[in-house]
Image (tube, rainbow, N blue to C red; front, side, top):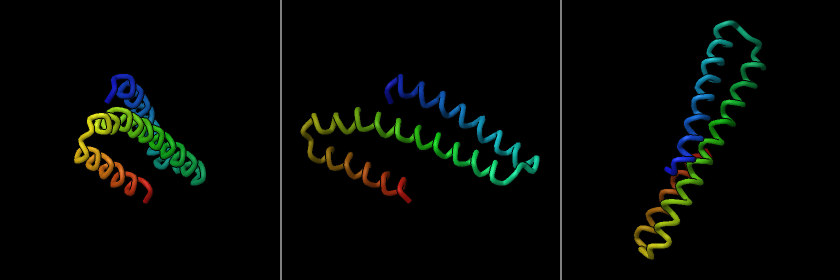
Length: 91
């Protein structure tokens, strides 16, 4: 992972960790259900952004390298990885 992407992802994940702790506190103090669900949606959206950053970095580095290498076996392997993970992401 590129250093800038890694730094940005870690920063976002630390914020998300705080959001999750906040959610646990909300549930523990019997906050209004809609408020809890709203915060869950916000945490989910934040995780989605991190996921997109990691995938973008992966494509820009590993997939691009496989294409540039001309190694068809490696190209197929990288495309298969992406297809598998994108299939899991869309569930």
